[in-house]
Amino acid sequence: MSDLKKNSVDVDPRHSKIPPPHQLALALALIFIGVCCLIAGTLFLLGIGAGLHPLLASDEGRHSVGIVLLVSGIALAGSGAFPLALAWLTAQDKPAEETSKPTTD
View 1 (cartoon, rainbow, N blue to C red):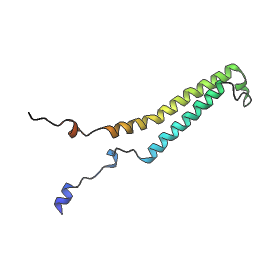
View 2: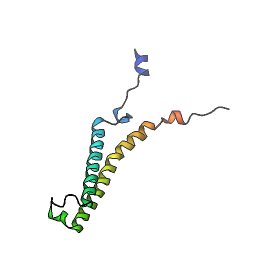
View 3: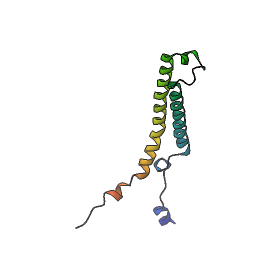
View 4: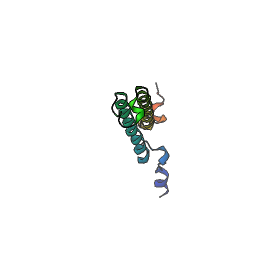
C-alpha cells in the first residue's frame, strides 16, 4: 500500500495545462465584445447611424466615435486573446526533464 502511494502523483490544479472554463469563457466574451465594437466603429465611420444621435450626424463627431470604438475593439480583442495565447503556449511547453536530457557519448 505504501509503494502505491509513493508512486502516485498528485496533480495540482494550478499546474494544469488547460485553463479553467471560466477563464476561457471570459476570454471569448472579451473577444466577442471587441468584435462588436469593431463592427460598430466601422459602421459609424461609414456614416451609418447618423439618425441615432446628434453627435453622429456631424462628420467630426462621427469620426471621433468611430475611432474610439475601433481602438476599444482592438484593446478588448487583445485582452481576450492574451489568456488564450498563454494557454496555447502552456500546452506546447515541455517539462524540463524532457528538454535537457544529458547525452552519453
